[in-house]
Length: 149
Image (cartoon, rainbow, N blue to C red):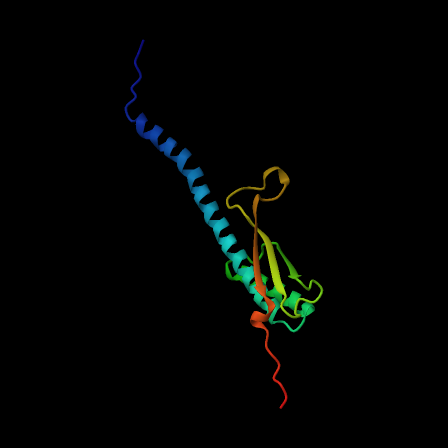
């Protein structure tokens, strides 16, 4: 029986093992950074939408401005094509958010696609859902009318 010469096979085995461990680790790191970027963008979008809503003259204009501000905040972070939902609610005056001492609550929902994953089983690229909430009192940014002398 002849013995096989195994000189140099450790380098090949180490290379394959390194590749098998490095590729998934690299994907995990890139995915974590992508999700963190999305979380930062959604948080900024909620703050921007809340401010835009509070500065608007009425609720209808406020909703349009809030969505535009949130979309711009996502674009600023490089995820402008991501799905976006903006929900605005107010307490204690739910039908007139710009009245008195209302507190506006803005919830922004979006998602980011996980990188380097193909469209598995035809259901679309895997994504990670993100949301952020921002509360602010309406009087904080409200301009007071000048009193006539």
